[in-house]
Length: 249
Figure 1: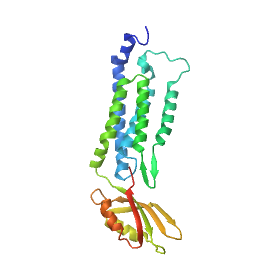
Figure 2 (figure 1 turned 90 degrees about the horizontal axis):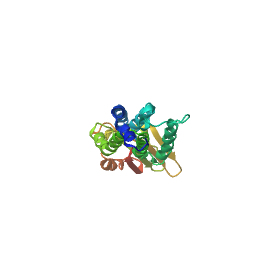
Figure 3 (figure 1 turned 90 degrees about the vertical axis):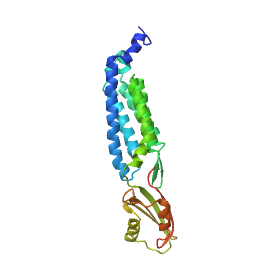
Figure 4 (figure 1 turned 120 degrees about the vertical axis):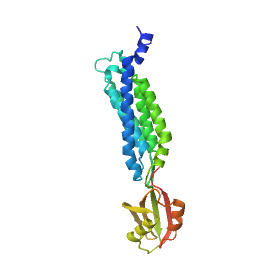
């Protein structure tokens, strides 16, 4: 009997193999839901890593972990793993290597971050590859579908849930002008935002003073749109120029 014989190939879809795949289904689906719950908290507070990022990472982690817990069912349960061989070390190397690859697609420009969901999806893709590699084909298919659905549709779910938009603001003041935190805080509050002063950055030279900070909307309805907010910022006392941008991507 060879590894390509019909009898061996059918072991990948035996009743026991299907039952194991159902267990994997339940694990990764539950992990996705739990990851989305954690990610929503970050989304609500306007952070860069939101529901999709947390959902993908949590789901992929569960997939890799559940695979490591079922070694007797790897490769259809018919392969003889040589003494001293440890496929989990191979999986560990894959995850570590792909982690560095995912870090390469994360971009930070000022207070804006992009590429987090792409990095998480790359990591999820590595988990799919591991599932296929050890013979959990049905689980790999489900993980693929869940990953694609998360990336394509979860943003619509996020946009429909209560949230607080975060924006990054850069203010340039005229020479000699001394800005006051209280005045800027009151101005932002009047337009539906509260300033996260813990993220304040101040740059000063002989020409002018520059303030960089993040403002978070009081609610989804109260936060003024950027286009309208720009007109209000232009009227701020002592401000010569400014920049407004979403603080997450």
